[in-house]
Image 1: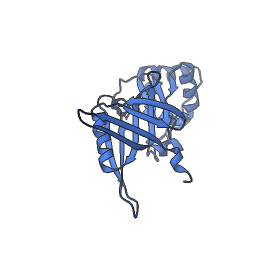
Image 2: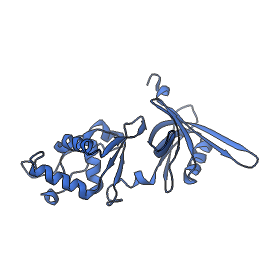
Image 3: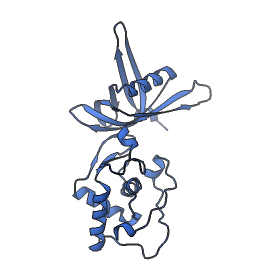
Length: 233
């Protein structure tokens, strides 16, 4: 925990009204953004810490599709907005002898749709980590793909070869954007099986996914089991 404050970024918000100007600056402990211009970004996740009134104002600004200035170690300052349909989640951090700290997490509508079954026809999947096993697991869970962890290395190489994965701007994470549909991924796996680039397990049974650091970052300490292999055979 030594010098932990140096790993934080900042989120700034300025609201100008007719007679007053409100300026809020909060600590930013996690951020995922997609650069769209020289210094503009589409934010997919922000996580900020601060007082009750300031965090409440940021929550309201998210729903108003307001623009924030984001700074953090490892990337240049960017102007970002979460866009339409963003979701906010609030919590409280209690520390003995100090006032409670409000914790606000906001995610874009696009990132919310990456959960299993939310948008099976989607083409873009925003993920918080680039670990190959984690990438395969999350893509498989979103689209209901019948896969096993042993295919992770091949899948990662295939995404890179097809230019279907690219890094995003991240604070306290290594986010990526994966591009592709369920139909495309099933076709890739089918071709790889025929070419023996990947193989079915030798025996039937539940598929166990390893609990890596990537899973624990998003609370997936016990990943769910995979589905049947029949769809791509």
